[in-house]
Image (cartoon, rainbow, N blue to C red):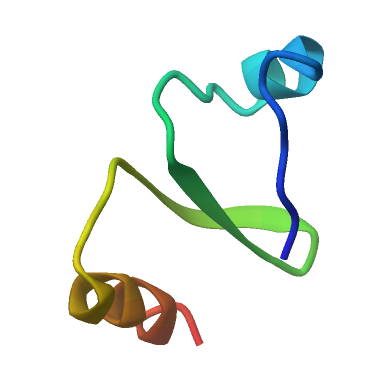
Length: 53
């Protein structure tokens, strides 16, 4: 897990098309597997994680 300050790391934010905060990006084998943007309830976030395990 990593946290990115988009104001300080604009190049990385652009590279991963971060246009909303929060943005969660999951990687599998070094490649982006899934992403979601915006606040969500804990249960929805858990489902987001579980479907990518």
